[in-house]
Length: 376
Ligand code: AMP
Image (tube, rainbow, N blue to C red; front, side):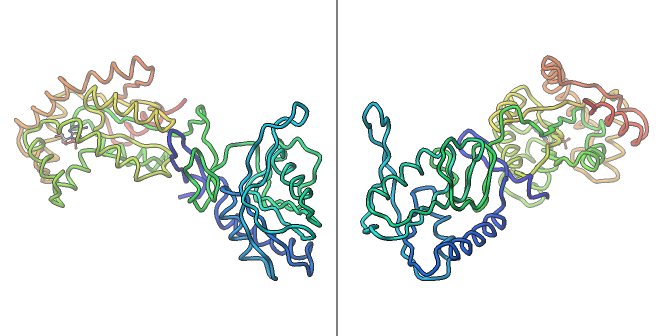
């Protein structure tokens, strides 16, 4: 797994890894030694600006060698005069800063309005020297003349969370820093591998996983492993599968969604055996949309019924799979597919995502047709 593929969901938005924690820690440790050189023998007062800088302040002070005081304050906005506009003041500052070297610890400086006003406030209280030290600095957003004395990391003008920074209250506890994934930044390739039982979906999934680096999710396989482990879900699923019927939608949808959430690093998924009903397809689309992605393509393997039956009977002899043992159950699964599932071809056709692929021939021949069908 590449570290850059790590993502998190906070409220309605998704974020991807931007600055890993070891990078953050290295930058803070370097900043601490630069600060020591800058400050010399003085005993500084570190002033952490809440809430965002609580982690930065803690790690910076841990790396700072020499006597120092540490305190935390908040910044409050007041309505100023017509010429001063909005005025920002420090609140909760009990220490006497007069005559002292004060190091303001900010989590992020963007336009610079806040740090500039913090500086005025501290100068007004008689600080001997005010040093501004920020974890993150956005040069593209910065509008002030004031020089920021110490910057740990320069960042692009994007929305960041983690390591103290939040999105609507969430994300402060993350050890890495993440950046917002923009709506149109949909790099995931999610495939539905479609077709009746016996069409070769499982076989071709291996090829697609190896070729495109996708995560394969087969609802049939997940049910079968639950049956093996004798879970409650497995017991429930078995009662339907033994008859060649579909497991109820609510159970299947919930299971599928929780499987997707187990792979936050995925570059995309191959959905094999899901969706099988319109309700499942609608649930899948809504779920992917909430995660800022969608179905890239439905690849439909086309195989006539008599070929399916003979393949499944053959597979039943080799694998011992319960629902492949009896021709009546096999035919029922194909009937269920015709009645409830095949309509999904039109569902994705209407969205312009459907591609039919001839499923007759050697495994390699079908794989190369699928590879062709994946092209943009
Ligand atoms: P498969 O391995 O995909 O052929 O699925 C085997 C059996 O698992 C099906 O005949 C159903 O009983 C059950 N199953 C698998 N996927 C689903 C699904 N998406 N919805 C309902 N039942 C499913």
